[in-house]
Amino acid sequence: MREKVQEALNKVRPTLQKDGGDVVLIDVTSDGVVKVQLTGACRGCPMSQVTLKEGIEKFLKSEVPEITAVEAV
Image 1 (cartoon, rainbow, N blue to C red):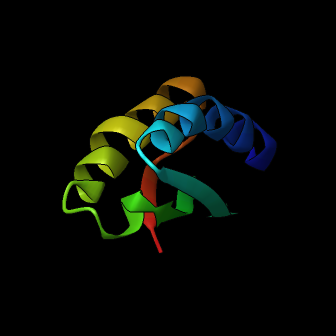
Image 2 (cartoon, rainbow, N blue to C red; image 1 turned 90 degrees about the vertical axis):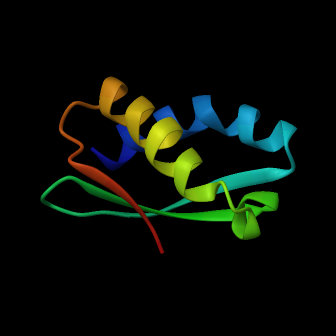
Image 3 (cartoon, one colour; image 1 turned 135 degrees about the vertical axis):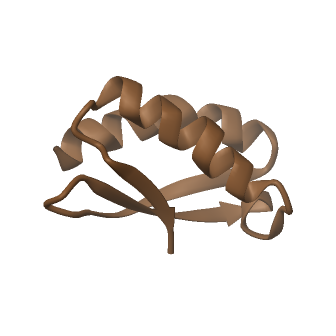
């Protein structure tokens, strides 16, 4: 599942990079929780939680249905 998640993140990454940010996959737990680290402009952005939940999480769940949640670490 980790490989599927990484492939999906690679599809999201260019959009984040356009705004000076990025996302790094840290872990995928056995119960489907994806742990990521937001970097660059995303790291301190007040909208990062919205980006994480409404953007990254929704997209990952559509690409990899086994995902239960996405968390920033």
